[in-house]
Amino acid sequence: MTPTKNIVLAGLGPHARRIYYPLLEKYAAQYNIRLLLVIDRREQTAAINHYLAGRSLQPEHLLFIDDNQNVDESPGDELLTTLRDLSRKQHISGIIIATEPRAHKFYALWAVLNNIHVLVDKPITAPPGSSIDIHAARQVYSDYADLERCLKISKSNFIVQAQRRSHAGYKLIKEYLEDFVQRYPIPVSYMDIYHGDGMWVMPEEIYGRENHPYKYGYGKLMHSGYHFVDLFAWLAETNMHLENKRPNKAEITARRFGPYDFLNQMTQEDYTSLFDANLPRAWFTPERLSGLKNFGEQDVFVMCQLKRDDVVVTTSSINLQQNSFSRRSWMKQASDVYKGNGRVRHERLNLQVGNLLNIQVHSYQSYEVGKRDVETEGAGHEDHFEVDIYRNSGVIGGKPFETFNIGAQSRHEAGDDKTFLGHNERARELHFLDFLECRPGPSHFSSHRMTVQLLSGICEALAHVQAGNPQQIDVAL
Image (tube, rainbow, N blue to C red; front, side):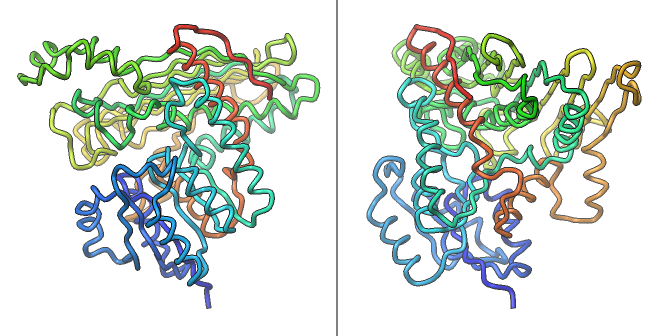
């Protein structure tokens, strides 16, 4: 008989409702899953009870903690008592951490110290103020080091949900690069990465939102931005195979665009003109706007060079936007703030290996997931994800050009699987299975060191900008 998987789910917000809960239901019978406990904030009680009504898998316990409880600083007695009592009564197999990121460290440390397997959403941790305060920025890496020390004496398998590492398109690129650099010892010389979330955050939401918040002193970088810092680090790892060209440091500069800039760019008058809406003037007073300077970033623009001593190995630009093209055309926030609020994704990669090889990714949506109103099968379609490879065939042989339509291929391979949500979601499912089957997989905690080093460095660069002292940050690798 299959051993029981006793799972705790910390956080049942929009992402967990779309991804993790359906996956728990999908694999409940196969892996004999018991959902012991779901934890969330008290203000979400009604929404979560509504979501759970009629689900095929029901949690045995629900715990709603006070909305003002700062789990990142001092977890309340009720939470600590519940976890302690639960772990005494029965073996907990694993925890899925899908809370607001500032609470990640508490749950992750508790699990690791109790030999419980972990699946954590990105980022691994997010100290409040990490993109506006230098000490908090440096804590991003010190948090990683704390967890790393604890893992050395733990039996926990720790998976980070950085799904591009299991994405069919990016796996193709990584495997191709690994082989290419073995044959031609030329480093990855350049990467340009762009991601647009397609989120239009309305003025009222900027001040109070809990899903992808700005009010805690971090923003895009700790939301979807982690994926693309990780993508850069993961692909750049290819250079580590080159003994005499391996980088040993990173030089980072960064700039931000935040809510203060946004509400000066999109003024009260602009909203009145676009939506015929009479917005409260209080949202746009100089005093209220000035307070937004301590909010996290909506967009971040990074220049990074990986160097071996004084020699440049890889130059990269990482440009990440939430304030980008959107299909939102309404003021009132939709009930689904994750994928149902006008959000569309634009994603691009341009990678060079000297004069020998160019690899590009193009993935552009023109409509919200499941709300197709554009007739296209390529760019603009929700499945659009194309990998293009250009080769200097006169030197290295092979075809001068190849293209791979990964999104369409993934949809075709899914066949009549009604649980298939798309190529990115399929990659998330593979990490979920790594967690269930207790295997390290491609996104084990230990493989994220360089990512977190760079992330912490970018945060520190942003914090220096915030302090009016922009400077280059050097990170030893």
